[in-house]
Image 1 (tube, rainbow, N blue to C red):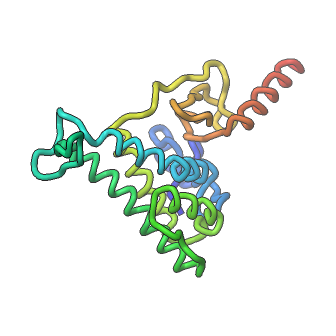
Image 2 (image 1 turned 60 degrees about the vertical axis):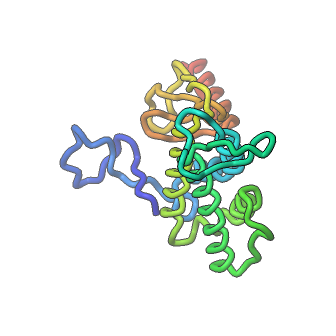
Image 3 (image 1 turned 180 degrees about the horizontal axis):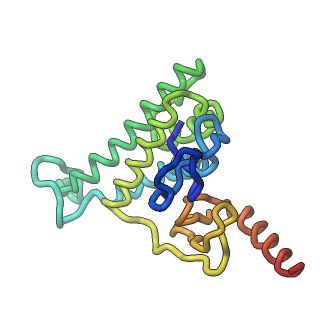
Length: 215
């Protein structure tokens, strides 16, 4: 299981409540993952092929490019220097997805992807996600993919600016710190890290309006 804790909620023996941000573990609703981590994993797997394609499109560049032998073909067969860090991260994501797919296929006794491509590996992992989340290595797999996704975005950012959702409290922690990250439709809480799909957020807004009307 991942070590996710509830924001501002504490174990009975917590002695540092003034500085502790929360030490009461979240409930694992999806195998070894809480709802938020499950949703993040869905999004990361769904976006992985797009991330790889984005990194590929950002390989060739002048500034910061590798000069020690890493090249891609350019026009008229002239080699173009590439950013070695982007090349390495792109390959690391592909390798991680392929290794994960192989491990899952062997563990579950199912047929894996016909070919190891980001598209096929991600589709395979999403298909078996419910079973995958019950496997012991799920926390390590989650962390690995999250680290690669974060590193890829740091090397070649693709998300537009974050948009805040003013005046709407989070249904989990009640703080008004909701935001929508660029390229996503899910609403996230900057305080407790909770997530809501777009339809869940619309329902939550209706609940708040109904409560306000009664009051």
